[in-house]
Length: 344
Image 1 (tube, one colour):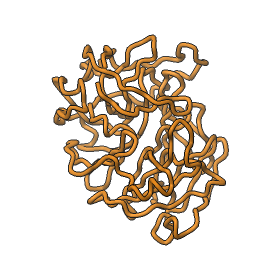
Image 2 (image 1 turned 180 degrees about the horizontal axis):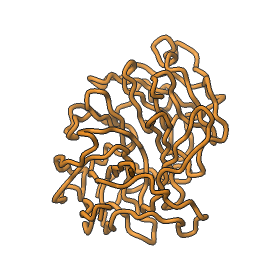
Image 3 (image 1 turned 60 degrees about the vertical axis):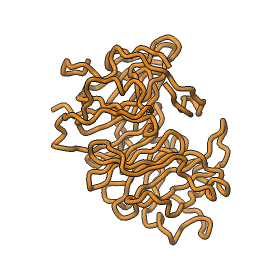
Image 4 (image 1 turned 180 degrees about the vertical axis):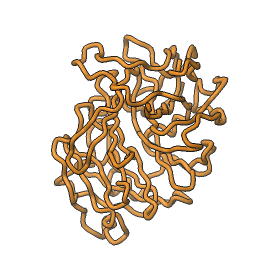
């Protein structure tokens, strides 16, 4: 059930679970076909997880208002432009564009150009972001069980055609891989993280004038030490001037907001969800009103093709993927956007 009492898409539906690959202390889907798990009711706030240290309870700042099933190929990160278009990447190496109703208008997988993959060893795109002046920004890394490139970069894609334009290398003395990115509200800084630190790069450096390999790697202009929450970072986005970071502690999925002027943070959301979490984004359509959107009919949606309803609304959007923990079935039966509105 959603918090308004309506049924969440996927409740009571059986679905196949993907094979997974280990990535750090969490699991990342490598390829998804569909396996049988029973979806539970929508997640409820909880303070602890089995075998995990105590974590803070949900502070009640946000309410879940809708869930939207999406293609598994969109499951890694999401962002949007100022024209109402959405951009998704996933599972490891694909980039896609949809209109405001999630109808795909462009995209391909694998996306990373063969020359880039061969030269830099990159095989994975993290949680993406968008810049009105630059395009779709792609955090780049290599993962094959280890950090196989030991460097990170920001790729730039044309927002109309999704054509690859160039990449800017990040100085490996500060960051060994790029897993997510978020553009500041004024468009001047690009934020990401390395270990416990938040890093900000000058957006003026994300340009052809600094493209790799012709030009040297760029350095951060700001480092906020120890600003990353204990739940880590699966993705980041700005809202009302604060940087929101999605992360996970066991089965507790959290969102923290950061004051980037000081590094101080505040817990926004803490919910128990059996599944993996990736991107976070903020977008409001029709004032955040929940409205129907077409069902995902692509075979990659698995159980989503059997939903009787699909909706989208709210302001804050988290991406989750079904992933049983060995004790409890996955909370959602397909790749799903969880959409929240602030409580008044």
